[in-house]
Image (cartoon, rainbow, N blue to C red):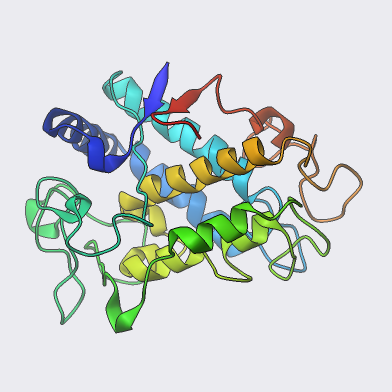
Length: 275
């Protein structure tokens, strides 16, 4: 069984194996295919049209399936690897261990936000950014620029206390747990972290930064915590809703996965602590 661990608890060998698997997927082209998929859905998901991966109830099951597929790709390289999660309520600064040179590398330099250290720096030659929104071919970050702060545990707890999964109009204006977690309303959890990291993480091509996977693993963990706290609160909407993915509708780009299939993560992986 795959066990996803807090990145702060990884051993030096676990970090090395995770990084090496990422680099292997980059070399064989699979990594960029994942970036392409995410960017396509960011561009096509709109509040008043068809929406699947973002701004919609299926934000959480879509990313759960996306991470499972990515984790399986990593494990095809090294079966011991799992996607770690980044608890940004605890590891809240650019000095946190995940930004060290032996793991993800740090923030970008001031003039162009280019990451200069670690295995994903352009100077390593191993991480060319080829799926991009502009002409820059290097990984960029602006950790905590302009005084931005990561979400707090109290803010997370307030969102986890919300008892309704989602509500009409089923987009970025909706009230409910999903939209407050995604970050279009309220204290803004998920979206705020993307902005705090900056660089490619602030774009549709955000998986170019390997921290994307660790951020979304924590978002997934929070969803699993919410599910445990509200066992009688179902995925919504159930059926017959235009432009969004109902409980038993197929989620693009897959032809065999529905939100109902993704409600229980335990057949695929567990977390290292009680969710």
